[in-house]
Length: 245
Ligand code: ADP
Ligand code: MG
Figure 1: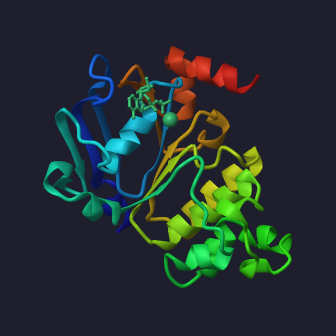
Figure 2: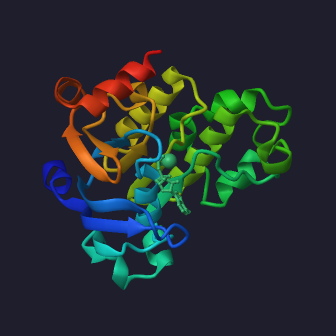
Figure 3: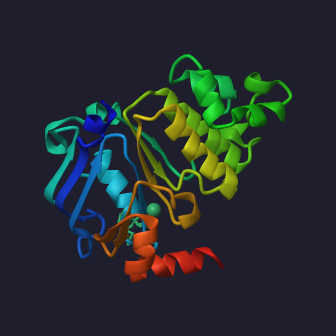
């Protein structure tokens, strides 16, 4: 059953070109092509400014492509409202908004707190350090948490929405490498049908992805597994050597 669902295309960018309305002189994506299967863990990597976050912005219909099409679960985004698509994708950004109340309140926005999701994000460790655990007030925008702790809460909150797709844009960047890897491998173990898209600049966190797309200057310059890209893609080689500095 799993093999049939995994070969189903869940996201497809076809010849997508895009220019931000605020910068009409500069194309950010130029005929970009990308396809992701249901249940895949894919990573999008590439030099800063290459267009990675823009891919996320189009996927969430914050902006619409100028040319080409973005299809999610068989539906062209041109034909649906932003809310319809956002119920299908849980998005976590680098500096997520945390409400000043408590971890409990932040999570309960998305439903009844799930033990599995607390386990996936190792929230137990975060709660231990707080005077009233789950119910401690977090301060303005979660100021009493570290950046990595805020990211754990945001990922837990996103997972609790139960959407088919989890879209992370540098969403584990404030965590240490070990925690970052653990969260991703926990999601795969406990939520094996989830489609994960991780936009990252740290290669170590996505080395084990099913597929890695290398995006540079608004196009996909290569895609494949870590070992293959390391042999064949100079942009990827450069990213890896920078990552080890
Ligand atoms: P990445 O995530 O790969 O670092 P982005 O997708 O954020 O790259 O940005 C790609 C290009 O688009 C950059 O040159 C950036 O300055 C530009 N850009 C990003 N957001 C906007 C915006 N809202 N308006 C105008 N230009 C933008
Ligand atoms: Mg970005």
